[in-house]
Image 1 (cartoon, rainbow, N blue to C red):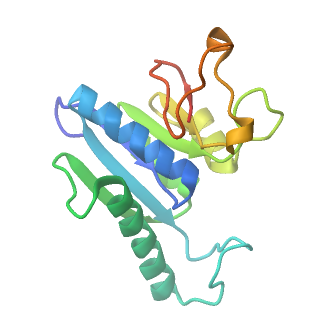
Image 2: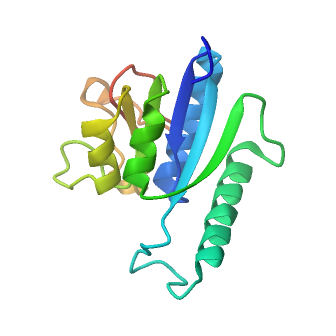
Image 3: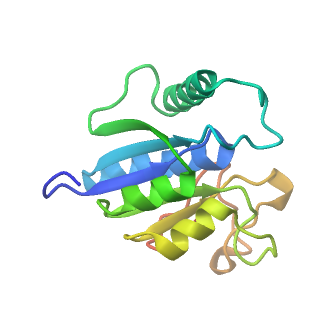
Amino acid sequence: MNGNKLAIVVGVSGSEASAAALRWAADEARRRHATLRVVRSWDAEFTAPYAAGGDLSRGQQREAACAELWAQMVTAFGPACPAGVVIELAEGVAERTLVDRSAGADLLVLGSASAGPGTGRSIGPVVRACLSRARCPVVVVWGPLPTAQRRPPSSQRGQAAWPAGAAPRRELATVTG
């Protein structure tokens, strides 16, 4: 992606799960001295039925996606973007955009709003597509669960649960937030 320096790509959407993925990816990029590329996709042809503003023009949709991306960056990093962070607003279907960006990355990080592995809840189409077609390793950060549903991993049951919003440090394909 940029010479010999490691590159981590994180897909964000404005959701709590993508905010958790952004925090995890930023921490990982700092630890590894890697470039962090934050990618927010938007598709003028698709507006989720639950999304506000389904009647927006193409330009308004782009502006709304840009505002969401900026808000997520400010929440994660404050008013100044740290060095080594590249921000991209990409027009296109998120699945394709992120798979394309994975070609030049060392790691692709995504958030998932499902409750995580073993819960019986299906992963979303973006995560599913990236897990099957990404050209680099993928880390899925499972979004924060309501406090009553938080459980430590089986190796830590009987011990204190993770603090709210904290992710365990593991070199696995999934991280629980």
